Image (cartoon, rainbow, N blue to C red; front, side, top):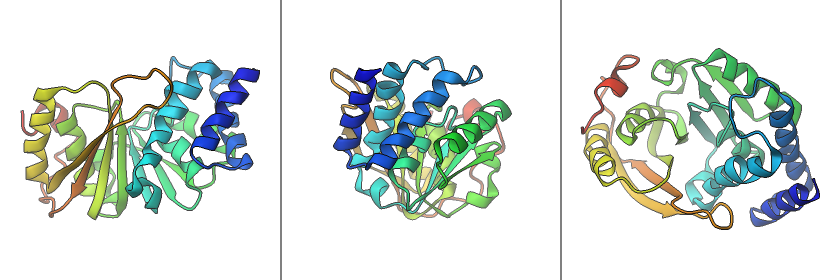
Length: 234
């Protein structure tokens, strides 16, 4: 486990995290490895450091994320990127929104075991999360859905000037073109696509950043399931 400890220390150094925060990341690694109900196939600590933690923390390369006070992670799954960013941003409130009860229970256990007190789990569909409407500084998604769908989920949650950060892999020209069309309908503008390298040798990792520049029509998001069936812009 020495090389895992060394990798964690390097990651903490890269993003200016202190010993306590590094310890919380280590506790997340331990929780994933030990919990047989962890909703991810990536559970071995050496892999988790890169695939989950390092990839999640690339969000800190964006000023909007570093400055955010209220963050929502849509479809949080096993807790990434939201849980790792909650550790890195103790002054921020991070809401982990997830519709599957088993995943919600896992994230609650992981938050407790790692002592992450500024993250909370909302167990429900993001389209039905009324409490979050218009109040989020940053909304994020990682491997959630096609980008037009992610935009429809995120736009109603964001305050004016807030941003969506969508973790993506290799460029998909057709999907990105559809996302631009969807964004226009939702009051969202593409601000940048940031190429990131979460760990040595990583390829095709991108953060797609959309800013909320106009009011989102009240008909969005559509009722649960419709966005996936009939994505905007497609």
